[in-house]
Image (cartoon, rainbow, N blue to C red; front, side):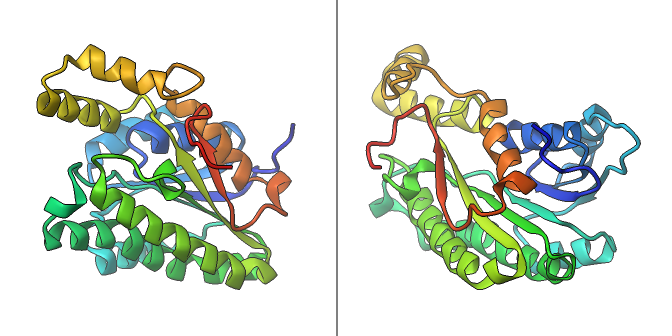
Length: 258
């Protein structure tokens, strides 16, 4: 299937590892010009060197998602125009929501919703001119079914999902779609952190915790980052032009709701 991504420009957040990196690589494989964005320049350079290149122009931007206004300034200063925006940021630390401190909510809200918002404000004007835009937010299945022990994450992810749906309603008339990809348990560094945290709190072994998490899905395994990236890249394509304002779980069937 020709996804029509040749000559499209994509900005991929959190693209030095995991789902962000896999999405960047697949977008480049489909012919898009990819700009990576994250805070570690050495890792950005390493991923940049891995991107498939058939005459494309790939770039990177160094930015810290703890400072939304600086993030926006750096993207605008790059003078690059983007047809595709992949919002992707590492999740907050785990723990019961009752025990969460106020600054945990504030940090997560800043890194996720505020940064998503300033990037959209910086990029959407060009999307409107081009008559083509794809905003894809990589969130979590907690949008549909809150996950135990991830109180702050559950709260903030829900806020991002509602922001996204509202944005989809506002921008659809301009040929811009806004959708959310909801990964289940995916073999990333983030998942390793969650497993280790659960093991230390329950006294169970890492292997026991991992097996329990795998068994929660009908697929009885973790997703690979590339499997989540498949959904991201399709939603970024011309083929997904009439898919707007939805949540797409990529979780092997773990989520119980329809």
